[in-house]
Length: 288
DNA sequence: AAATTGTGCAACCGCACGGCG
DNA sequence: CCGCCGTGCGGTTGCACAATT
Image (cartoon, rainbow, N blue to C red; front, top):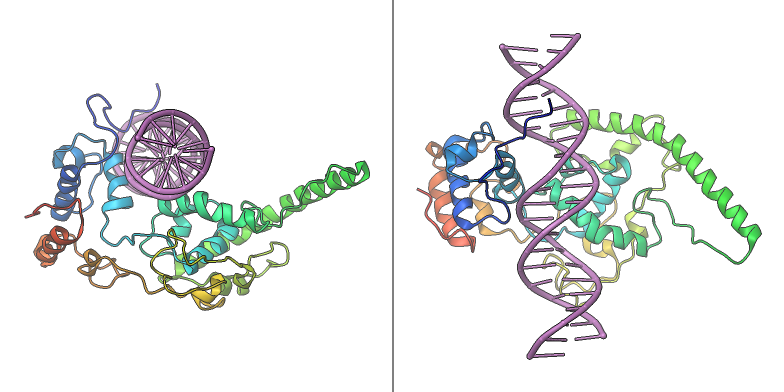
């Protein structure tokens, strides 16, 4: 029998979205809200599958999105959350307002992974990487034993970690605001932080070459040698002073998107039109 | 200047899950 | 209980651009 495809693939457009398509999608969602995604392309006049529309909206067009590189504080938070939650990007993203799971996943794979490896930390296990030695056969044996022990330990940890993850998720669901992962850990019975060495921000020493072009404008100007010099402290995950695109301002609070009414009746539409036409290079169109 | 290699990110794909009849 | 349907999630791919040779 098999599962039905999410959409009729024949004649559907794939690949990068054009400004015109973006316009149609935004216009439709502003008018109708986020409804049945399967129907969206048809109703919006798009030759895309509903899935593609949803992805485009959540990862790129959603107005509460932050753009640009993750700040050091956000990065530290991602690392910390990843050590508890693993590759559950959507869960991690839920604690970083304005960031998408896709964005975090990409950032992890392209930046954080390398950073951790450089520091001698396994990005998957968050444990120090033991450098392999090939000179002494005895050493090789002990190395194998060590690996075996690590795997054994890992299995034991996995079960306790699973319990923790469930507890964490329950805690997180209860809380409507971002939760300090450290605080959660403190309150999580039955979990010993010694078992899973967490990377404390003070352990992260990343030189920030002043000439680095990739470092975002967020920290520009501060010639720091430590991640924390930039982020301001280990105990609290203070989101930095972001360079918010003006197009974000009309949504009210920068992080508060929950109460936003998608319907143009709310008066938001007028502001939307104004900002969109002003701020987004590819959004040179009039919505209404 | 051209070719090659590396990097980052948007988008796609397929599976899993939950709701509903 | 079962199957269908819509949606969400995580892994992977492909492309554009940058860096290097």
